[in-house]
Length: 315
Ligand SMILES: NC(=O)c1ccc[n+]([C@@H]2O[C@H](COP(=O)([O-])OP(=O)(O)OC[C@H]3O[C@@H](n4cnc5c(N)ncnc54)[C@H](OP(=O)(O)O)[C@@H]3O)[C@@H](O)[C@H]2O)c1
Image (cartoon, rainbow, N blue to C red):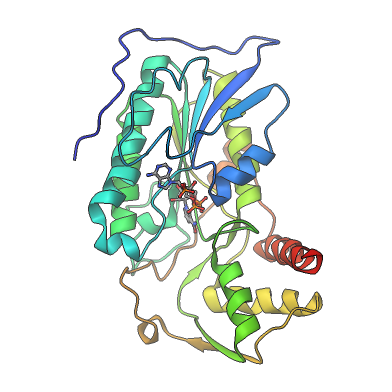
C-alpha cells in the first residue's frame, strides 16, 4: 500500500517577494473545483494542473520536476465516487489517504504551503451538526475514512497547511446532483428524492474563489498558521429541498421538469455507503480568520441552473 515518494534532500524554500510571479501546482484540475480554480487564476499566478498521466494520485511519482518553481500545492484531486469506494477501498485509500501525505511531505521539503480539500463525510452518520472544525470525526464510509486519513497525513507532514472541508459540491461541470436532477427531470414525470439528509450545497466556483484567497494568504504571510476550516454556501437544506429548488429554477428558464418530486427516507433508497444524516458545516471560523462568507446556497444553485439552461439553449 506504500507509494513511491519523492526524496528530495535539499529543501527549496520558496518565498514570495514583491513583483515575483507565483506558480501553483493543482491536482484534480479536470474536476469540478479544479476547473473552477483554473478559471480564477489571479494575475501573476501560473496554475499548473498535471493530469493523471503525469501525476497519478493512485501512485504518486517523484515530484521534484513537477515542483520546480512551485510556490504552493492545491490538492483538489480525490476519489469522489462515494458508493463505488465501498468496493474499491484500496484505490480510494491510495488516492484519498496516501497521496495527500506524499504531496504534503513534498511541500514540507520544498518549504511551500499546501491547501488540501476535504469533506463533510468525515462526520458521523447519526450525529448532529452544524459541525465545527474541532468536532470529533467518525466517518461512516470508505470515502469518509480515507478522506479523514488524508487529513491526518497532511497534518503530520510538517508542511504549513490549510485543510478546507466542504460539502455537496455542485457546478455546471462534471457530474453532480444538479446535473443528475436536470437529466432525470427531463426524462421522467415523477422523481423520489431523499429528504432526511441535511446539508449545504456548495458552488465549486464559490469554493474555488475561497481557495484562491487562502493560498494567497498562506504564500504572502508566513505567520499564517495551519488549520482546518469549513467552507460551504450559506444556509441549509435536504437533497429533496435542493431538487425542489433546482426544478423551480429550471422551470423559470423554460426547461422541462417533473410534475412531482416525492420526499422519501434514506431507508427507501438504499445505497452502499452510509452518509451523515446531518452534514451541515459551521462556517464561522473561515469568516473570522479569512473574511470568507459564501452566498446563500439558493443563489448559487440558481446561477448554475441558469448557466446550464443557457448552454442547452445554445446547443
Ligand atoms: N463532490 C462533492 O460533492 C464533494 C463534497 C465534499 C468534498 N469534496 C472534495 O472536494 C474536492 C474536489 O472535488 P470535486 O467535486 O471537484 O471532484 P471531482 O469533480 O470528482 O474531480 C475529482 C478530480 O480528481 C482527479 N483524480 C481522481 N483520481 C485520480 C488519480 N488517480 N490521479 C490523478 N487525478 C485523479 C480527477 O481526475 P480525472 O478527470 O482524470 O478523473 C478529477 O480531476 C475533493 O477533495 C473532494 O473529496 C467533494
